[in-house]
Figure 1 (cartoon, rainbow, N blue to C red):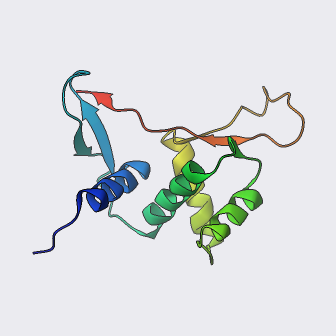
Figure 2: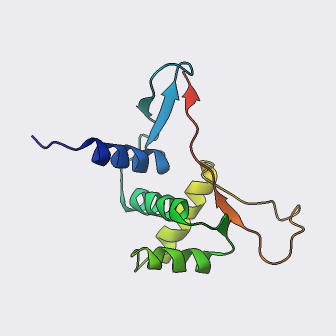
Figure 3: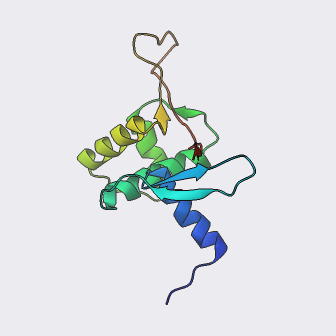
Length: 127
């Protein structure tokens, strides 16, 4: 039987929440945090990439990225290279769909330069 340290278990659970394989649930502010499965899809390379993207954005000091090429540079700097274009696009679309990535709507963006995209941390659901 394999054992994990508390730090390893926390990292694994965080990555599973980051790609929404798990969802955190809390009955009340004083209740412990619980985890429930959410997707029902097999854990695959796209989930790994999604968790890598979230971890990379979490480690950056910038508020968000300006375009996909900038994100790819950040991933490369984090040691995540050789990304498949289709899988990368799918991972970004899924992260947007589950609300982990957000950006202003094109019709509402009035800023200078490209529209930024930023990380939104997962919030525990009320059980």
